[in-house]
Length: 218
Ligand code: 5RP
Image (cartoon, rainbow, N blue to C red; front, side, top):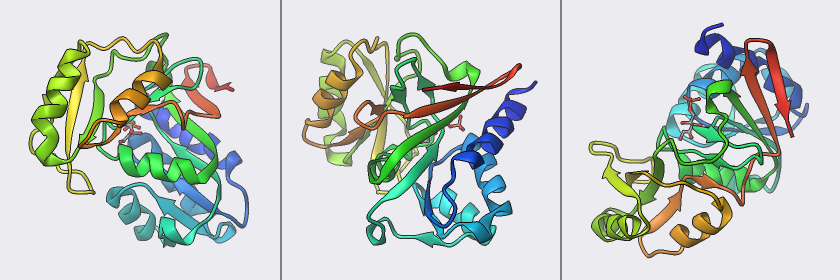
């Protein structure tokens, strides 16, 4: 199976986790796009979606799925999103699509994070994928110096402005053995909006697309 077929497989499988009659939290990325296309088939059975990016909002609306503001919703039973890396504990690196901050906000409203990914995303230790960090523009150089002091090699993702008007630093060379500690450390620096480690908001379930079918990690 191709990577696109594996993404389509888990996008379909995630429909089983949608709670009828409720609002669904929807992430961002090519795997989530497969999920959104499947969600459109059952749009009459849900109350709408809260979206984590302008791109996902546009896709949802184009398919006739109402998108609610996150502030209108107190609780979401599920948030469904992809990942750039996920380990066996459900800890993730996200933000390859620069949507990490809104993804974390929507994940935080949700009771369960259902991660959908093809098997190439499963790793033993996070850090092979460069860690995205969303930064307020005037803090870019200072945050880059702090990341370098941690042993990382930060690179400014030039030309990219997030939905929140900020910039992204991608950090290579980190071996993330304690995701919760590193997330807490980076997130407290002035100018950091959030880093792409999802430890506080880790996945409750991961639906992994494999050549043998969907593997469920809990
Ligand atoms: C966007 C993300 C995505 O979930 C992540 O990049 C995975 O994307 P894809 O499904 O296209 O591989 O975190 O900010």
